[in-house]
Image 1 (tube, helix red, strand yellow):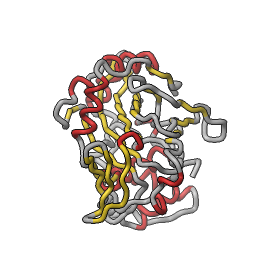
Image 2 (cartoon, rainbow, N blue to C red):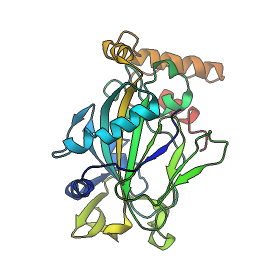
Image 3 (cartoon, rainbow, N blue to C red):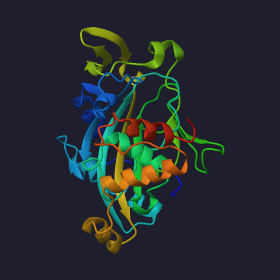
Length: 303
């Protein structure tokens, strides 16, 4: 696993990044963005994608997505000759307690979001059953926040060893890390008096920008309002990291890809080994007894 490192120069034009964040408002809740079952509440965490599947989907992002600073850092950290930018997204977090330690959604050959639903990717990563098909992915995280807390906390030696922190980054620094296989989280943001009741917003909540004030609304109801600097604004960039051109070709030709059936069968075999017997599902919509068993069985080691 590549050790985290601080990149001293993240962007050639950091002001452009802040302008893009402003232009992206209003933002949906993360549960709505990830298309979790409708009605699922979540922490006050909002997101927008700038690039997906290697393609820019938000106008004006091209210079920061094809970022040579990130690409060169990923090559060095991951020992990769070929780095292919994959995705870029904004995460906007209101004042809140520390998030739970977690791993980011992993990437596997043949199991991108277009082949399997998002809900299934996290259990695949936590299970350890699919490492043969795993694709190394570099993450570069930058944040624009100078308020209380909001550090990047990570466990470089595993969830049973002490954590480390990166805090106080300037607006033009970033952390380059392996967030698919290194437990990490955002530490507490702001002050407890600023937290929302229960630290939750509804599925349909939206984060709007009114001048320099961030406003969280659900329908016609205003749930909270924060000064611009009280929201932790971060940008996450991800890229495939291939050791060489041959490894990239093996990924592209699909000769050793997972299929949805293989995924189901591997989970079923492992659950049977654990003494759990659940019928194979008719589909992967996330509402079957099989899906519930997978979600409950393959969880973060630190949950």
